[in-house]
Length: 147
Ligand code: CA
Image 1 (cartoon, rainbow, N blue to C red):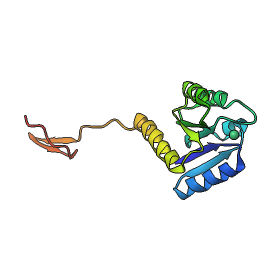
Image 2 (cartoon, helix red, strand yellow):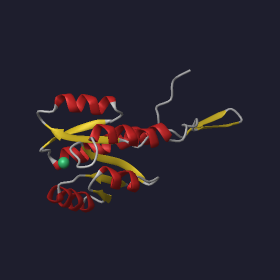
Image 3 (cartoon, rainbow, N blue to C red):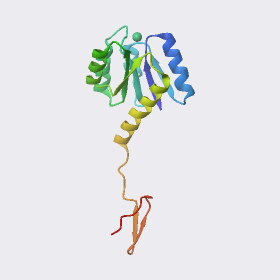
Image 4 (cartoon, rainbow, N blue to C red):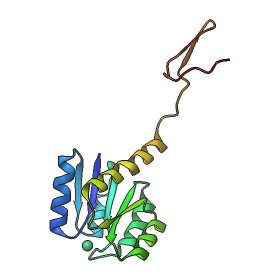
């Protein structure tokens, strides 16, 4: 699981990186939009996107990432910026956290959006029933419906 952290605040970046690595995530860091677009790769599983960036409006960057990839995007904004959050969601973000956010909440949101995106690409569920000359063996562990 690789998280692309887009954040221009060095201290926050360090704290996030340390925390996420401890939690078992791989991290890639980008301090501005240009770095973020360069770092966006096929192994990026979620993008944590600060909207206040030095070189590009974070909303624009969100839209740009969304054009290139279906990767889940979580935006981070200040509490007072409700319009920004709405614009972010409309620009293709999947979720948001309000700064200053609790890292445990962030992790729960990362888990939630990646669970959703994984289930979209997951293998179709095959019928886990083997039918041997009339004797049905249900491998799914679900209680069988009486027929
Ligand atoms: Ca910022």
